[in-house]
Image 1 (spheres, helix red, strand yellow):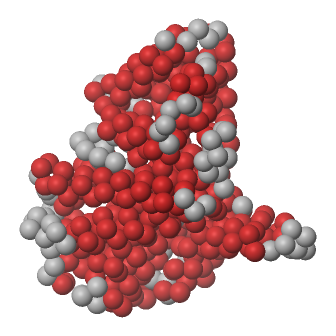
Image 2 (image 1 turned 45 degrees about the vertical axis):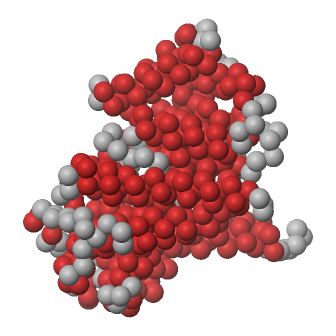
Image 3 (image 1 turned 30 degrees about the vertical axis):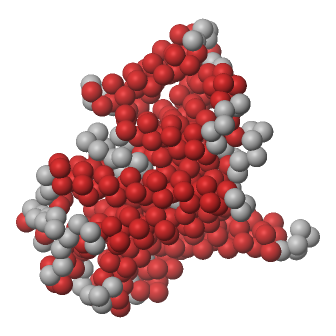
Length: 438
């Protein structure tokens, strides 16, 4: 019975979001209430469980996502994102243009939310395609593959960061393993796949094809742009590597780990960006702070949706559904990694949102990790891979791609959906291979 109630709850969540178009946060709260009550929880306990789930989820995440949004905004409005893209394109040349946009998408995609990165980079991709006379899909899809992979695999993006918190996974290790898995996923689903679909003709609308491009003197230098955009990765990655390499009694060990803590890494990166991308370029502090304030307002609904997913996770735990499911599946021959991927895939197909699918799947499979010996970082990546699978008409990213490239639904399914599915499949294969060695 507990499993049936949980399944009905997930179906109701899908209906409310996809069919009735109810706000995702409201849908989560309604489903939480119904699942908790039907599972026999006391009414007050249901409310307390929802509060606990929201609090536990957002306590760490507000800091990471808030600071991440600030950094992404500063990278965008300063022209650093444009500098990185145009410089890489110029350096690689027409022959290797795909690899240039892949690298640009990866670098810019780490500090930015997917939608922000898409809107910032896609006009530049249109310009590059027009200047080189190359098919737009051939140039654009590899860049979007990079953006999608960073969104699904790597902190400080919402789902990987939140799921890491659920599983008590190391952010640094998750990022390191995520990059290892991301590379083949990006290469195969991006440049290699794009070469097979050159016949798909994209004809973007005129308003998308005439981007406002900053002049060279209006943008920061390349070194400053890359350093500032990648500073969180540098600090977290360096701290993780030194944690392995340094002896336990090394005098500065605690300071290194403190600086490499995701919260501190993001805070330091934002402070550096305020100077390098703002004050050092002649902007007034009030102007820079206006950009920072605007960035935070853009993530309000993302935070609420994640909070709702955290509440559902807590209801599933407190009502005993997670333990019940764990007991059923504990003797199963299916790897928890594969199981997490499958559940995330099913939720992705039903709900559409990669973030919602990943967080909901994490709540369901959470009890399976303890006692199995599976690395929590690999569980994060397995679920992240599943959450990117089979994007179709109920996913906002699907329509963003379709409308900007002005494709038919059929063409979008044969390009965008196939690319996302390839990323998800290659991702889980990479996770299973990593599991053999770590």
